[in-house]
Length: 495
Image 1 (tube, helix red, strand yellow):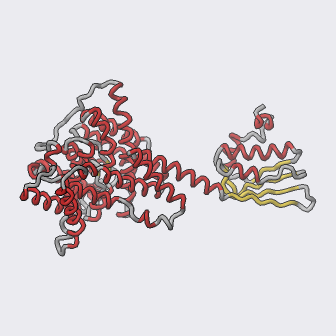
Image 2 (cartoon, rainbow, N blue to C red):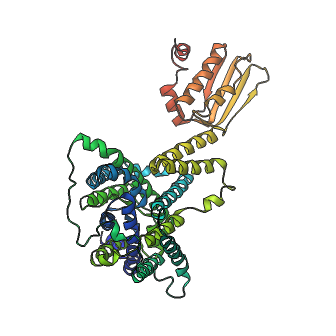
Image 3 (cartoon, one colour):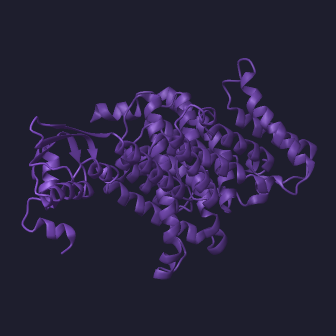
């Protein structure tokens, strides 16, 4: 146990602390921006980011992954906050956490293996588009100063890394914020700042129970939002965990991560924070900055709180244009540009799944709907493709009275009709042998197809022998098949 503790917490102290500091600096503008997207005070997102990052360090299933307030979650909160206010958002956050813990115990994290790569790509691209669209209100009906500041911010973000020596040491989004804030303060530009968006925290968070009535009416209001937050939060967290697994060549416990996300969100709701989940961008920043263990996530959360509480007066002066520039950078970095270049290379079905996922998410502003549509479509394409991998050959004996059919491949709902069509029931035969040594029967549709073939032959007066069923296929055929049971023809025909 002591060895495990050292491995998950103290194996990379210097790298984790430095990576945590970089992540904390990058989290500040994003947490504020996500709060503004959701329509709440910046302190709601900042408290949430601090709390979730710290709690997940202890209870999460993926060391080195950063969780905090995110744009995907913030987008789902807009309507709830607008119609019912902050207190209902806090209640929804608590319920979201409970649902995620339940999902962890039900081992729903294992379902990630059913999400195809094209769905993940569509998910990421849609998230990038929604984050960009959320910045448009800050860029409409404004003075030219805002456009100039935003363009300057993007210039700093993308050009500063090329500055010798210091370009790689200091995060360019932080440089963007510092420079634009200094320019706005020195010139006295009359543009919107973070301070105009709401009160920043100046104290440590305290325990806060949501001030909502404990009634079924309240549950009816928050449950749809909580369910959507839980699903999107787990989807993004599981996808991020998979990406970090690949980057670090280490495994993670997806079901523990589900429970951990739930515990973190409950803790966030109890100190006045919004729901959050794993962050793809920040997790990659953490890993590439040297963060590997749980200490990096803990350090990020602690540094974030210290800077927010003790540097709040400076944070209020940050112009919104700087945050818009940072969020545009996040959306550009999140979007998978390779997916556009690969449209000509990848199969049409893969491209359709990716595009449909993006379209549904952008149209509904709900990442869960898009992922569901993508998974269902991918399953249909897969079933159609596998259904074609079935072949039936036959041979007739010299006397012309006995035909042997050899079935190769998968028989299920997609290939059942093809299976039945391969047999000639009008041929005058004394006996038919159906060899299933190289076939597998998957569902009751396949069993019904076998029943139909056997009974049709027998109805024509032909003796039928079925042989070679593997153990799994034999089990389902014995249980649901009727061709070897009394009154088989009547049962099949519904008499």
